[in-house]
Image (cartoon, rainbow over all chains, first blue to last red; front, side):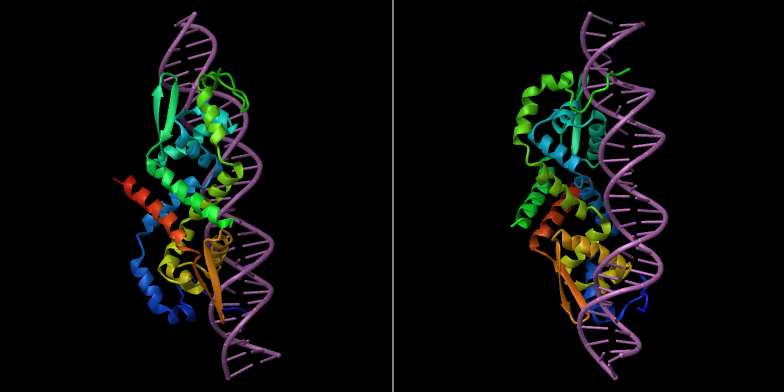
Length: 124
Length: 124
DNA sequence: CGTTCACTTGAATAACTGTTCAAGTATCTA
DNA sequence: TAGATACTTGAACAGTTATTCAAGTGAACG
């Protein structure tokens, strides 16, 4: 039976590659930075939110419009817009009864587009 | 009590913004494309996988090295490497007993970096 | 061969997440 | 003020997912 390797325990392999691992460890960004980065991508990692982001890049829209466009309930859209807003990916402005949403900055589209480039290359 | 709006039903707001919504709908990418894009970002949306990606951008490493670096079990790392491999983000080569992993292409780093730019601007 | 090492895999579990439903708030209009 | 519209919110539910555990490969080596 294979020897069980505890998380903190080093296997022979680690010892062999000690130099490399130590160098990588030193360069490693803060735990929090990588966590935040994962949180950001997590927000992009839902097709409803991806569709909303795509739509808002095309035009500023109200909740009702988005719901109709994506064939979903206002409630579902509203919940997702809240997630997007907390991640500072979208912003909103109220005009009477209607709340208009739009992308927070041009930069959001760049992340989106980088992803698109990857999946288009993948299918080659 | 508020009138319940069914997904397929249009509210007054939709009618008002009919032009905009229709234009956006016409431009909309294929359902599948946006789904695939969400799936890609979903893979980036986990801090363990983000750490692995970051590490592999620094150096080619074996499962054991990554496990030691991130203070996790080989099994957990192996499971995540499988996800990354299926998404075509990493590749592997065997050298005797040891399996080395590395990033699939330089492009993966670009998605990663775009995300980093966003979170560094967020904290301003 | 049998053992060891490096890694993989499947099942189980706990934690998380997206949508729905019902009820709420905010704004406008008659 | 009363009702309608646009949207938000909290709880509940179902589906997903990351890690652990135990058992399994495949390669090297005596």
